[in-house]
Image 1: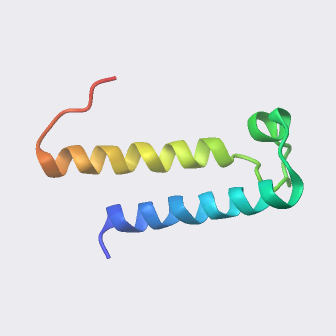
Image 2: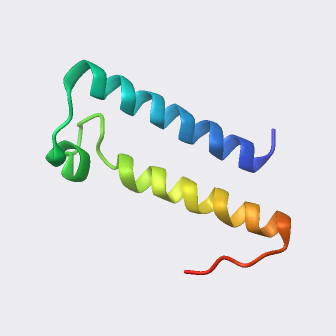
Length: 69
């Protein structure tokens, strides 16, 4: 499995856990943006964003294009 595929698999796993949590417990804005340490969503946004940036960078490398910020 390529690095990009592994990263996408991790993103999908995080997304499944997020959706399962939301369906079972509901979701407040505080939980989503500032979940405390030990909470199932702690660092979810940061981790997901980091993986997405890595996937995006790999895709640009594969196509020979540049990522603009």
